[in-house]
Length: 395
Image (tube, rainbow, N blue to C red; front, side, top):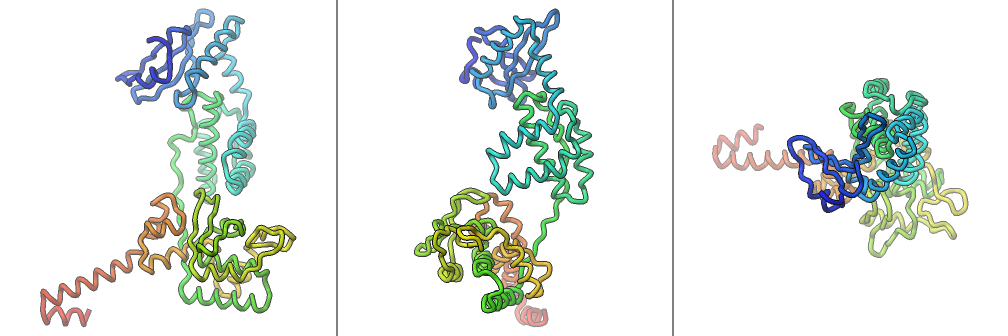
């Protein structure tokens, strides 16, 4: 078919059975096309009397130029009596899950993940994944083993599912790096455990109590002012904890009434501020040579942990089961009660997925139910006359 290029490869259409389109320039170099449409580069060669086929990588991962270079390198090794497939298989046997985790950390965690996510990945690796798999050769890890590992932590479904995601990504990269055959990820077909999403919204009375306690703590100087301001900002903005704790004055535009966050869980984000949030920020002192809004005790530093302040506040307010994250959920529930639609609430909270905001859909059902009841009553009065009026009064 001539020389394999990006254009000629894209033109290859799938058939009922898989086939290989060969390159006319380099012997044994081809592209395998599956009925599903997936395409991968291959090298067909002979080692002694045996014909062998080596998969070089998917076409959406490896470029034609890279695959061609690999083929030329492998053919040169063959002339020296080295079987490239046997050599790669031997290398796979030598690589353990611990080795894979180290490379995964260096080339993925440290490069592509946010600091908070890096911390969680490394904790999961150290505490759960490596103690179980550790020195196991990655080529020998089976689906049954991964399922057994997942089952071991069924009592903590959230942690079990996060570890499963980490393992999945690790073994996907192992395939990309040529350490396992393509399509051999042992996490495949293992179902995650159902996670119960906790929903806790502070009532109006509870919010008033929190506000009273904040005022009391501020008057008594029991907490650093920035900690009290942090709680108020969480209540008034619906921001995530890390977004407030890492807020810099350079992100704050009080004239426009916005926070311009260069980075958040979902990327760059603009937070629109109401008057209570603006007033909170205006009252907060700007310390010289300190860029942080929620400043700490050390000069130039920020407050690292809001939990001690929150624990004292909720104990004093009598809210033993309330978490800091519940303030964000309370903001969402207040928005629903104020008549805001789910798309607007998603924008206020900085959600990128509709499904995330849809968690609050049931809250919107209450005012809709009340409206339905009111409309039905009016219609009943019109249809049934006096009888409808009596039913409305008695109902």
